[in-house]
Image (cartoon, rainbow, N blue to C red; front, side, top):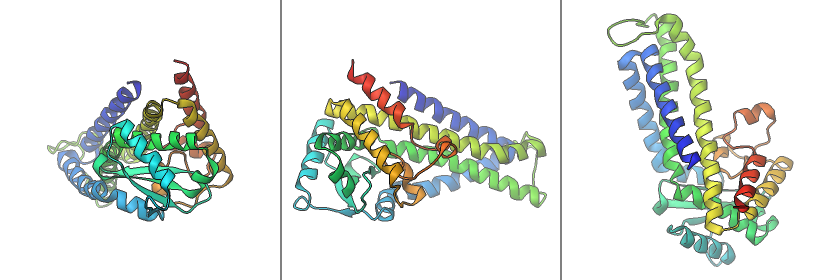
Length: 284
């Protein structure tokens, strides 16, 4: 419940930031134009994001005959979660990792690396896949798309304000609703996209915690997921995956190596905190 409330608060903050930035940088007209543009781009991303993500990751759909145990696990967990069975994909990579995609439970897919199947126990694999089904059950793709709409619209506003200032087209305190003046526009141009990105990342981290909790409920064994997360984190630090940065946020753990500064802008929560929460839930 806490993560649901936190996500709602963050979404409200992102919406408020968008409204303020729109008024200060572009007035009512600029705000509406940016929103329409962002909605158009993210509508396309929402409907085709699963195909793009699977293609960019090099995932290949596998049949039951190719991976009978994997399909059995997915079928059993989907039944427990009350979900239709998602399509199953494999990524040829020695580093263990996984992700889920799809605009809704009826059009969903899970993808795992072959390293995941080789290096983790069956119980740990079940924990990982239950986490991914948690994303599907919680409709995280939809929430991420809405957050992307707002963050994208704010970025458009910043770009519009930049060009308006360059060509002298900024209308600070006119009848169109602008209220910040040139100085306010410059500040919002710099700060608003950064703030929007940070809020969007915080939403993503909140959904990861929620997927952990949902996955633990599906299996009834939170410690299996906790153990899997520790192993996945270790392997992904030792052997980072060569993935497109745009898809990194989808994986259960960050597939890209990064230090402290990178972690500040990470869409993934700290692994040790995720493990602590799962361990605490096992004691209840």
